[in-house]
Image 1 (cartoon, one colour):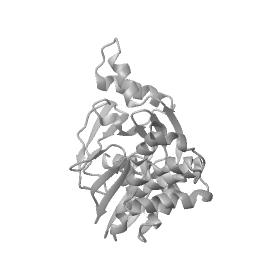
Image 2: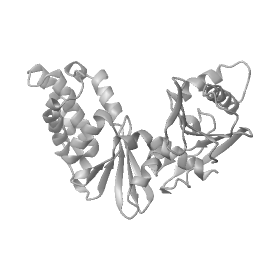
Image 3: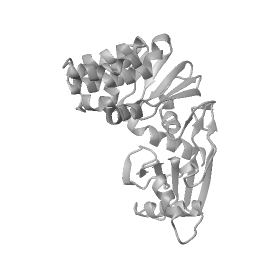
Image 4: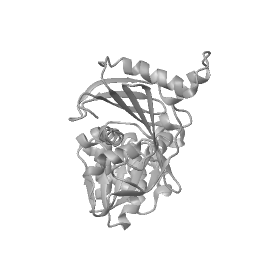
Length: 314
């Protein structure tokens, strides 16, 4: 990209849409446009339209209307889009890129659209293994890759609703596994008999013992046998609802990470906020081989990944 070219990072998920105008050198965010116009909502509007635009054109017109809100000058603009925009419900369907793929992102599948000579849109596919898929997390991994070792094997963990554990070695992402930790936590906490024995509360160190108790139960392969104890602990007043909340968190995060007790690979964790504290506690209870990235890197990972893809398409 030239020094005069605008660089826009677009994260288009199922439920949310976000454009960020970014300084390509410093990655400073200049302006943000975001809304709840996720792929699912825009696709539904597309199906209900009366003008009969095709799907790509409909999504493209929506995207251009949002870009217009950035009030850009008439210079060349590159937009890199990841997430659900490359799904069957999105702007342009792309196959998942198969693993392995390198830290340089060259093996990812993409589609370039040029609505005008000055606007280049790059849609990036998700990635797949033999038994798993992801859309969006692969861009975070590529953004973090320059902080991973090129000469050894390790595991990159991206916690979240659907946590990804990505195995790598010698500058190549080899395989990954998805853990539905966050979704299970929300479901158990709202849809099961345990819901009335839990109370969400902001984290503080007073709950560490209860969280680590849950991690230990998972480490001992007592995960399923421990869920109902949450209700019993509430009924017998052995734990408060708030303490149960973090005990459940420890059970689920511990269940996700329990296999690490049997690996000597170095584990790299990329998350921020409360999750960073919880995963740090859990991993340190399971393995001595772990590194937590600085929170500033996590905030910039998607931008770095998008920029790397933009440079690949110069």
